[in-house]
Length: 277
Image 1: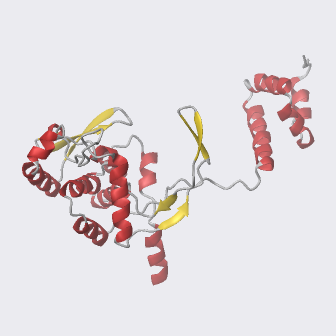
Image 2: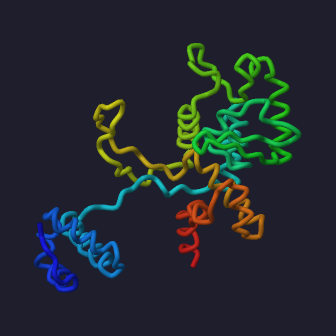
Image 3: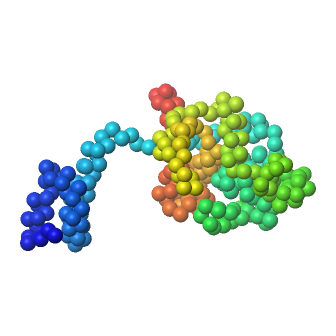
């Protein structure tokens, strides 16, 4: 066991670059340091710097992860093209909820008729395990009411899900979220309004059911199904007079820091502005 007679001398002797490697490898020294640092903010900051320098030495060229955070919003022309291209009414209804109310794909895919009462929608967010109630825009409500009346038999047959599944052997009555994402991606690619801007750099292996499975880098698209939520956010932000608090409520977010993710500049718009200068 190491004995410490003078704490300051012990720390000053250890916190030198030539001894950093020894510090990080000696578990007993590290335990002592953390005990000492518990009562001193200065020592904690110094130890943190040592550990960060060691990380940089070990991973000098480690690239920043690309996980797909560059998602641009639709302009009016692109949205009209998408709605005109899609001939299935139930998919068009899902798109309207995503683009005019900012719903996530999983939320749009699980709407049931009992969720719509007096022009308001109860949004079921299974990820956060909560429900939100929002008014439905007039144009969207009119389309949805006509849709429910036209397809009432099919909707009732599928547990009242608006975006029901046509698959005869489907395990669920509503359309799968991933199927809806694929429909969206295929449509935007065929329309020529979407493109791949990078490949993801997520971990090459993932654990599923206790097994290590290899995962290939996935393509990242400028337009994704989440672009509907981005589009709604930007449109509402502009119509609210650029009010972040009102936009946060409309987006059902808990903090303004979350809102910043959706208010990022459109890279294509930046290029257009630069070309016009």
